[in-house]
Length: 150
Image (cartoon, rainbow, N blue to C red; front, side, top):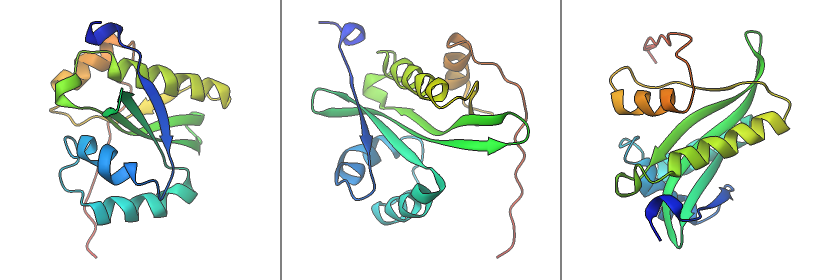
């Protein structure tokens, strides 16, 4: 069976699930290399009450993709599903993992009564941008950041 036709299992990972650190974090590190097991656990513990969730894609026993997401109420779109992280392991890219994760998140957005799925993508992530455009997403805004002195 080819990689593209393989059925993926999509699994919600709750705080405290050991697979977050042992299986999802190694995939997330491909996009977020600054994370450690401790910082990732702390972020999820703080973010979960704010709506942060993680969805993992498994090809058999192997985690091949992870999406961090949340529902957000806001004045611009009223209600949207925001994707914090969308990562496919390098070994599984172009195998339908990202498409499967996005399709499931789109389904969840519609089920929650949201007409929007949104995400931010770094300005130099050209391959990711090509993927998002292929998935019929549009670049509709600029995201600005400014460090704040602590």
